[in-house]
Structure formats: structure tokens, C-alpha cells
Image (cartoon, rainbow, N blue to C red; front, side):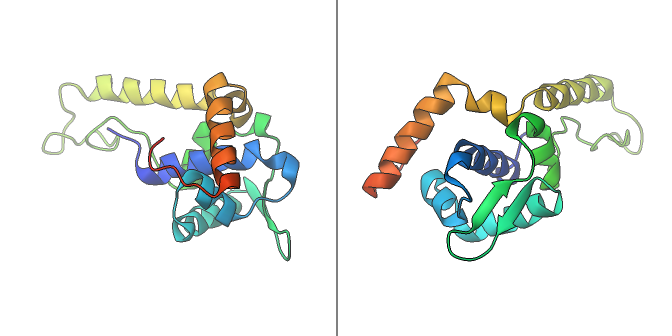
Length: 155
């Protein structure tokens, strides 16, 4: 089981948006530069995030994206769900047909793990992530690099 690039990038981009909310709308180009995510990939993700009601777009000069609701009200699991991502530890995607149409020996163990992961991600909001010292430190580093026009090659 692993969270794919789609889910990880969506959470990263939403956290970047939340961290920069005080500057008004954030362009996908700015997120792309700071997070080193391709602009075309961000456009696909933000179309889904907008349809899910997590972001709003602002057109015109100085336009970009804003969070549709406060960061305190957006959980990591909502972001992952918005891009049609799942965090599922089972081989059968929870369908109970993992062993020739029947439930395998460890099916319920993996279902419980999936539930624990889901609960964990439900309980973490963007606002909580924004307050983490590691997130603050990394965001400052990214801001300084972006201002200097230097792109980091590693996190």
C-alpha cells in the first residue's frame, strides 16, 4: 500500500496554498516553482479540487487560487478524496474477493489498517500542518529560494 503521487502532490499543493493565503490568490505557477510540481499536473489536480469545493479560482491579473473554506476546516483526507485517491491497504480494494473470489486470511487486518490510516488523515487539518515547526522551516526555505530564483533539487 502506498499513497500515489496524485494524493501526495494534492496535499502538498493545498498546504502551499494555505501557507500563502495572506498574499491573496496564489498562482499555480508559484506553487509549481516552490514545490517543483509540473504546472500541467497542478492544473489537473486543481480542477478536481475546485470541483470538490476545496478551492476557488480568481481570474485576471493577480488571479490564482484561494482556499474555499478556512484551513481549519480542510482535512488531509478531504484533499486525498477530492483527487479520487484512496489509501487502502487491502489487495482487493476492500471487496473481500482477494482469494479467488473469497476473503483472504488477512483481509480484516488490512481493512483495519486502512481504517486507522483514514482516521489519522481525517484528524489532521491543513491548519494543524501549517503550525508544525518542520513545515514552517521548510516553507521559509522554499520562499527564500523562490525569491532568489533558485530551485532546489532535493527536499
